[in-house]
Image (cartoon, rainbow, N blue to C red):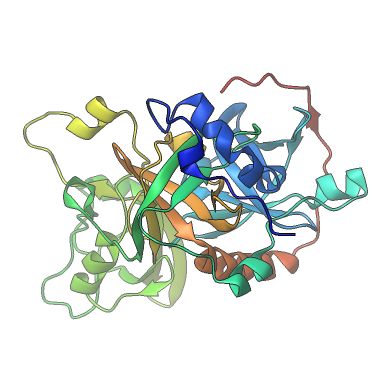
Length: 344
């Protein structure tokens, strides 16, 4: 028997695709995927969604929302909160792996998860103009939109361009640090004569290649520099700056359209759609009308411009993160919070 199909012409069109009655049309499409979606809290506040990518207890979320977090909790369907372990980070995709194996051990059952292998082999039909739904914890999606651009690479744009104005020795062919004792970088621990070997594990061989690597980042993002001092190799973490707005005005996008994601450019590949989401709603899955997993929302970048990591990229990077995590022992879920309300 052929599956039923929702025909748009059979439904009276509401005033907007954000209208509740329109979102209700997507309830069947979200039915399975919402079970693999959780809210993630940082120090008690909801900061993102996470998508369970392995039933044995692994999920991915937006990494930059949890920089420096002292406590990360996942909120289950019943409202209960469980402290989870932060795993490795994919800085290029801004993905953090969450270790939920303690929850699995406590419940003595596996978690509902996105079927990454099945989705990768099914070649989801992704075309400009197709409807997409942003899946949360409720039966209906929290936002609906259409695909506006097929997967592509976008490195930087206008005011999002990043910089890290380290002083370098002009006569040196390597990325050799110049005088820093009177600069803001003195407090980082860098010294004159230090040589920057890499930025987030990306090798640099000169001041020019250093700045090129930094321009791939986003203002406010924290990066790890590998530094050589004589025979000693060590790492330091610094925050990337943005171009100085000499007018003293705030980015007009922020005041007109609401908050944008702090880390919103530099991803290897993105699927662009026009569903309006808040930065704290990143990390959750995006599905098509047929319920097929299309990707993970990773950044709000404009008024009606949201970027998602495509399903094929999510599959590849999630597998890498899980392999890195599996060498570490599971940590039992030793702390459980009280039931939470549904407010954000």
